[in-house]
Length: 384
Image (cartoon, rainbow, N blue to C red; front, side, top):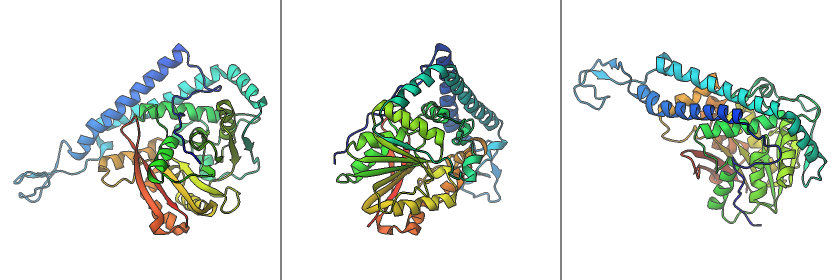
């Protein structure tokens, strides 16, 4: 089965993509540049202050060489950024820019609600190559109900009833603006990175059936549908509003994707149903117990010879500067990312081993972006 390079990325538009007014563009441009400059300030200024504090700790040993200069009477030590006025200002501005981002995007969607609602109604009446299966009685995990990821209003569980898909539209718009502000680029996406990784690492692998765990608004799921056009593609998530949007979005793009409301650790599909199990930035958004459950479900769902690839942020990359590790944990306290630190301290390969995969079949890789400075963490295994 042929693999194709997906042309779907952060610049992809569809019938539910809002058209930004002049005011919308101005607000979003301000937020974009604020985030870009705050990121540069953190890398270029705060990191140096962290590694080389202005007031080094006195050394008890006059021959102390921690500074790299023999005979100095000071030694360097990691400063606590929260004690710095520069960090306090950076932190406040970062939090404020995130809040302004959500206000600006929500206002844009609300102002265009009548037009977008009409488009959604037209899409809903259109014959779908894929499907949508919701489970109104599905019990939501407490962590999912209590977390407003990245500060998104209402969180991923927001559901205003009826055919509501607002949370999905907000997730896509927020993810695009946030990522561009963080320097991720517009011509790449996480799903594309996984498809590219598979092509480079397992060139002969061609799945007939794919499942995307924690698929959200369906943006990354679309990349698997485009990358493996002959395969049967499924996406599961807990959020009904996210899935309604994902289904309409796939219709608009002409993609055959089957969406199901279910937990990533209990999808309700039969054993050995899939050749490829994937997730995109799911692992850092779930608690350890759920992560372990996702690994067990990945093993259960895979056919012999199948692959699982979990893509996430590279918090565990060897050699990551201490300041960057510290800054990542800032997300826990200030950006509604309660499981970021626990994920950075988790051995995903060990979780895969505990789930049943052989250690010799487990891999960890770092996949570069095609138009950004970052790399993605790829961890997974082949099932024998």
